[in-house]
Every structure is written in C-alpha cells, then in structure tokens.
Image 1 (tube, rainbow, N blue to C red):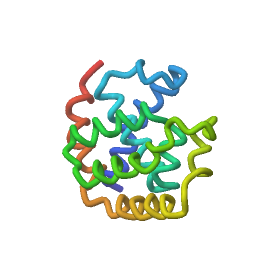
Image 2 (image 1 turned 90 degrees about the vertical axis):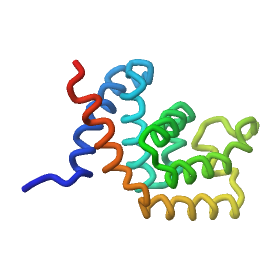
Image 3 (image 1 turned 45 degrees about the vertical axis):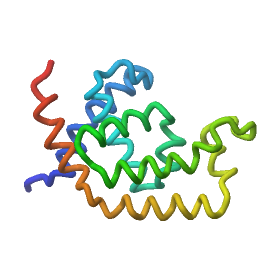
Length: 147
C-alpha cells in the first residue's frame, strides 16, 4: 500500500525530532532547516492532540520560534496567523509571578482566553495551508541528500 503524504512527512520529520532528542533536547544540535522540520512536526502533533497550549507548554518558546520560522519558510499564512494569535494570548503572562513552569499557563488564563485558544485550535485543524504537503515538498528535497 502506498503511503500518503502525511505518512511520508511523519517518517521524514521524525529523524530530526529523534536527532534533537538524542542530543538531550538541544535544538542547537540541528541545522536551521532541521529545527524547522522538527518544530513543525511537534507543532502538528500537539496542535491536533491538545492544541496550542499543549505545543507551547511541552516545547516552549524556542520551539515556537522555530515553528514560526518554518511556517514563513513554507508559506503557510493561515497556520502562521493562528500560531501568532495564540502566542499573543499567552504573551501577557510571560512575566507573571504565578508561573513557575510553562504548564502553569493554562491555570491562569481567563475563560475568554481559553475560549479564544480553543477557537484558534479548531481553525488550525481545518489545515487550510496543507502543512504536511507543503512541509514535505519543501524540506524533503532540500534535506534528503545531505549527510
């Protein structure tokens, strides 16, 4: 049975997520393009599983920045707008003394902010930009032949 592009993207991107994980989670162990691939894979997985809060609280600001760069690279304006809108909701809390860890963020959000993030998550799930297809098409050719 032939794999669809989502499966191909998953298989391709996992090698860079694994590379980061084998380096103790060090994003610096990856090239910029590899960082983008890994961040996109983490973004997609967490956004479809638990939404923006899961992505951000699991992986942090650095992963967010790599994902933003990747969405710009592959020209995914809808996903980029959703991601940056989600970050704007939580950015107000970056210096909040109640936050000892990223997973404290959901505890301090207002109901309105939580609803906004949920609405953004649902828009992301519509996948208007066809992220897997765009990411695979862009990164596979540029990274597959590199040692």
